[in-house]
Amino acid sequence: MKMGKEHTVFLALGSNLGDKQKNMLTACEEIEERIGTIVSLSAFYITKPEGFVSENLFVNAVCEVSSIVSAEDLFLLTKHIEEEMGRRQKSENGVYQDRIIDIDILMIDDLIINTPEWTIPHPRLHTRDFVLAPFNEIAPHVVHPVFKKTISELYAEWMRSQSHETSDRYVRDTDY
Image (cartoon, rainbow, N blue to C red):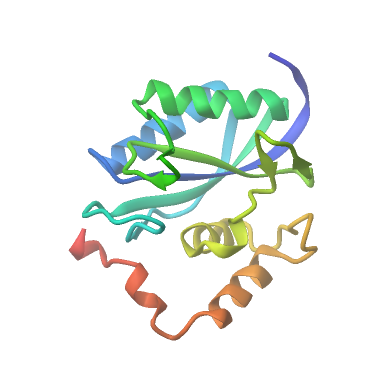
């Protein structure tokens, strides 16, 4: 494993199977053990699935991690954590599925990586309210290295682009 300079990493976490909150906390423990120190963790957002149909609601969050792990190893470590927690595959025939845990790398410092295997910053970060809302909560002033806009600006743009009916994506705690 390559170690080097300290990086600021933002990860999106999601779970919609089993004890979702426990899955999220277990993922955070594994991140701290293998990747680095969690500097900030958003609230847990309860959302309806996006991109596929499921009866299972999601718990989503974003965390900021201080890490000396290389970008390449970060990618491998997040996949190992997912697999060890029971994650099998992201999709079947291109269709998303329910998952015990999902860990997506949103940003690593101001790196821009575009390979067939992965893209950093996450290519759909700016289109997902279940990522933008918690990201904006913990790091509104972070600048997206491609768009050159803050997370707060991207979130505001996303909100303006939606109808006023977006609140049906989020679920009250009492509905969970």
